[in-house]
Structure formats: C-alpha cells, structure tokens
Length: 117
Image (cartoon, rainbow, N blue to C red):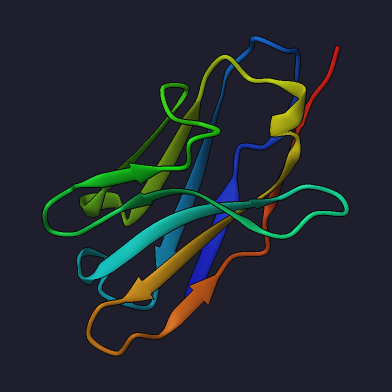
C-alpha cells in the first residue's frame, strides 16, 4: 500500500496551490480519504474529508470556503485545491486513506506548503 502526496511549494499570500495524493495497493473506491496538516510546533489538524461512494465532503472551519477536496476514482487520486492562501496555512500536508472494509489507516510522507511573501 502506498499513499504519495505532491504539489507543495512556496506561494505568496492570496495565491493558490493544488495538492495531489496518488494511492495504490488497495481498492481506492472503498476508502475514505482525508487531508491533514501539521504546522511547526503544532498538533496535526484535520483539514478536509471526502467519503465514498457519496462524495460528501467536510472541512475544518479554518479552510471552509477556500479549500476544495475532490477525488478521481479512475486515477486513484485525491486532490486538495487551496485558494486564498494565508501564512497560517503554512504546514506539511498529509494524505490519509482509511479502508472501509478493514478500518486500516495509511499515511503519506507529506508535502510542504509555505505561504510567504
């Protein structure tokens, strides 16, 4: 099982980034996918969730209206579109997959997002 994030980088305040998470080794359509983030010196924070098969989404209050989570089951990929980025969005962003049949959790190694002028 692998979960691999990409798309992080340095962006100015007000800018946008799209993160991608490619999963392999399990039935992607049978998983709940989440994005978390961890800023320096802080605990890991849940950012966004997308459920299968409904496609229903949830967001933390801190990103609601600015971030959008989506998934492409044909590509085994989940995305996080981040708009109107703020310096406080600076963090390592992690992708999490929970398999609905076993309850097992799998994590990627993270991708760093830095919002700074």
